[in-house]
Image (cartoon, rainbow, N blue to C red):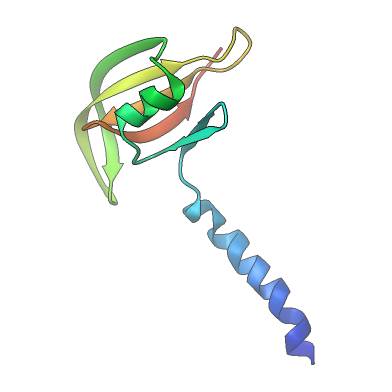
Amino acid sequence: MFWRSCKPVILLCLLALFAQELQADSIRCGRKLISTGDSAGDLVRVCGQPDYKDRGSETITVNGISREASVEHWYYKKSGRSLWRIIIIHKGRVAAVEVGHR
């Protein structure tokens, strides 16, 4: 009897522990969601052209391996009061989503 009442609580605790690992970097554009791994073409189709782009190199982690790679930073800003959303593109795919300053 005790075990049956504890099962849901144990399950919720385990889910809470692993929730961060299950969550991918993403941004919302209107009603659509763009996540890491999506193509740059999908990003443009859903969010439109970025306000600004630049290129550079950065240490990124792909499949658990960190390395120096050439990337593009695409900057989006919804309004004057919102924070910049910086999308890091590597080999035509969304590698990361960061939130910048105003």
